Length: 295
Image 1 (cartoon, rainbow, N blue to C red):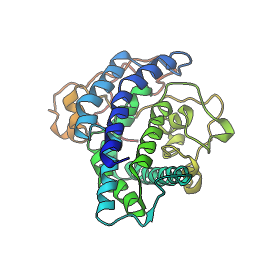
Image 2 (image 1 turned 180 degrees about the vertical axis):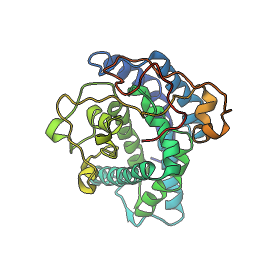
Image 3 (image 1 turned 90 degrees about the horizontal axis):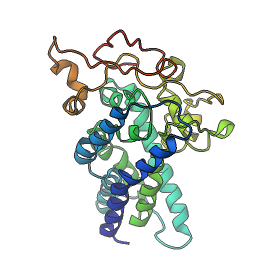
């Protein structure tokens, strides 16, 4: 498989995943939801994904990753050449996936530690009702930052065949499942693989859940680096940030890290969502939240 063929396949998969897979999973969410997300939020998230996240951040995120890795390999990077055929391909996919997932873990921890990175990443966490559409609610500039940090490092380590990179792009579609609004978790085996409950803890409003469960795919990194949290069987907390009004427009989403500085002093705040008390116990619907996002 050539790089061109691999990228075409990746673009096809990610293009379909933005419509077909989320639509199917949204229907599944209705079977056993934790909360009922506002329809307007779901529409906003997918509109944002098409207009800003996928367009400005690189229409296919994994395609951008593939180009970054390939560019480093072409420049002489890739200390270990991964098998491109035979039985070794399975091992190559595992090695590449683990390396990429470790890079994602490190970058994710930095997003919660650095004020600059959190000013962007808070957009993802500002969704008050975690669901499939939240998967696409990432600030558009974050993909560029990964392109110049995480992906080149993996390219320096591994020289990967486009087929291996394509396999990773398929595995990455699991992020839609992890963001699902479902009561699904793996209990005492949660260290093996991310799940809707595991990732929901990461998005929790409760302070005891802050800075836990950063893993994208493999929670073993949380176990190793001390950020692992084992949820109780019935633990499905409210999600979001406690002092943040939602974006009032697509433009405000575009300028998210700068919106406080650019917003007129007398501009009205966007009203907080009025959810069921058990879904959003911290926000008082009679009060307007402040204009910044913090943990």
